[in-house]
Length: 121
Ligand code: HEC
Image 1 (cartoon, helix red, strand yellow):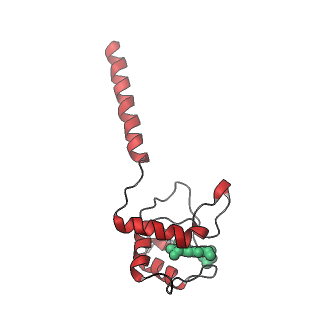
Image 2: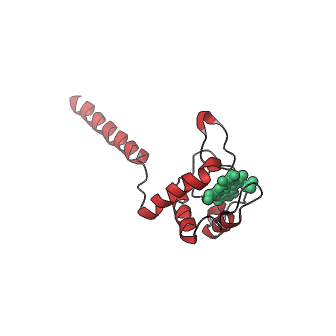
């Protein structure tokens, strides 16, 4: 009986540790960190969650944005869209690449995300 309790406790520990590992923040390489900073500066006003659950102006971005296609995302960032300014005169190509590599680290939320582009490549 005592052994069963110990076994269950151990199993519980293993499970909760597995949960912790999953919840750990993603480690970014230096390019992705640059991208994160640029993203917060140039794009955050529209693409980062505002406070108190206010709706963002642009869609929340993650690795599946722009149909998961880096080329499509580059065109989006350089040329903008109907309600989004283009950044080709503000950001260097390397900065755009850094932003894209950062966005590709953002996991897709469990809930379906709204996107203005069709899914799939
Ligand atoms: C003025 C607000 C605004 C800013 C600033 C802005 N965006 Fe956007 N973005 C939007 C809106 C709104 C959309 C949705 C398309 C539309 O309505 O034009 C969008 C769409 C996108 C999409 C396409 C998402 C998809 O999957 O359909 C990408 C990628 C994107 N933005 C990236 C960026 C990046 C990167 C930056 C910073 C360099 C940025 N945006 C800055 C407003 C903005």
